[in-house]
Length: 450
Image (cartoon, rainbow, N blue to C red):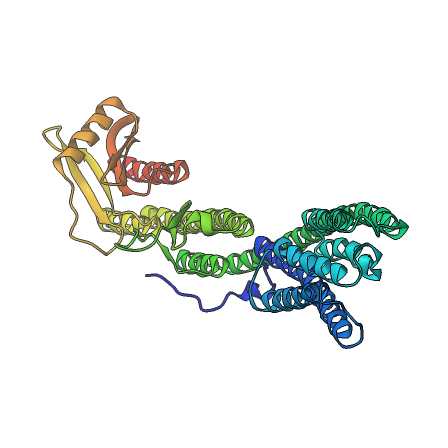
C-alpha cells in the first residue's frame, strides 16, 4: 500500500530551481535594458514632435520647406504610436526616426540647419538598447542623412556640416565601444549572479541533505523490530522524495514510472517517481537511508540471533539438569526437545536411530512453532538420516527455503543416533548448540545402557 505524504518536513529549507532563477533574472535584466531604450526613444520622438510644433507656430517656413515639416511631423507621430502599440524591431523604429530627423533638417535650412545635432542623437538612441547592432544602425542612418544633406544642398554646405560629421563619427565610435562594454559588463554580471545562485542552491541542498540524514539516523535508531523498521523506511523515503512509497509492491498497472531500491534484509522500496525526477540531494539521501536501514536490519538480526542463542542455552542448561535427574527419560527428553525447538524457532526437531531390524526410524519428534499444518518426517528425511548414520558426518540440505540439518550423535563410541532439525539452522552457532544437545542426550543414553 502506498503512503501519500502531504508535506515534507525538510521542505522548510527552500530549494530554488537554478535554471528557472537564471532565466528569470536574465529576462528581468533584458527587460529593464530594453525599457530604458524604449523610454529614450519615446523622449526622442516627443522632442521631434515638439520641435515640429515650434517650427510650425513660430518660424516662417517657405512653401518648399513646408512639406518636409509635415513629413517629419507625420513620421515622428507614426513612430511614437507604433512604438507604444506594437512590438517592432528597434532598427525599424530607428529608420523611421532617421527619416523624421532628415525631413526636419531639410525643413529648417538643410546644411545650415542647427538641428544637425540631432543626427548624433540617433546613435545615442540606438546605444541605449545596449546592442551593437542598434548602435551601428543609428550610425549608418546618421551618415546617410549627412551625405543626403550634402548632396541636396551643395551650395550652402558649410564648416558646420563638416564639424557635425566629425562629431557624429566620434559619437558613433564611442557608442559602439560603450555598447560593447555594457554588454560585456552585463554578461559578467549574469555569470556572477548565476554562480552565486548555484552556490546558494548547493548550500541549501547540502543543508537539506544533512537534515534528512540526521532524521534518518534518529528514526532508524529508535526501531526495535523489523515491522517498525519497514514502516520507518517507507515513511522516511516518502518524506525525502515527497511522493507515495511502498515496500515490496510491484509497479501498479497504469502507474507512472517507478524507482526501486533494495534494502538488504528488509525488502524493496518502490517510489512512484522516475529516477530522473529526483535531485542529487534526494538520491544521496535515499542511498544514505538504504545504508542506515541495512545496518539497522543487520543489527536487529544479530539481536534476534543472540536472543535465540540465549533462550536455547537456557533451555539446554535446564534440560541437562532434567535429563540427569529424571526417571521417565522419554517424556523428559520430549519436553526438552520441545523447549529447544521453540527457543531456536525450528519447525521440528527429531531423534532418528536404528530399530530392531537395524533400519533408521524416528525415535522422538518435537514441533518447534505451533503454527502451520501438521508436520511429520518424510521418507526423504529418513534416507538422509541413514546416510548421516553410515557416513558419520553432518549433512545440511535446503528444502523449500528451509534448512535441513542431520547431525550424527555418538553413543558409547558408536554413531547410533541422528539429531535432525528443520528451520533456520544454517548458522554454525546453532548447529554447535544442537551438537551439544546431542552430546547430552548421548551421555544420558549411555548411562541408561550401563
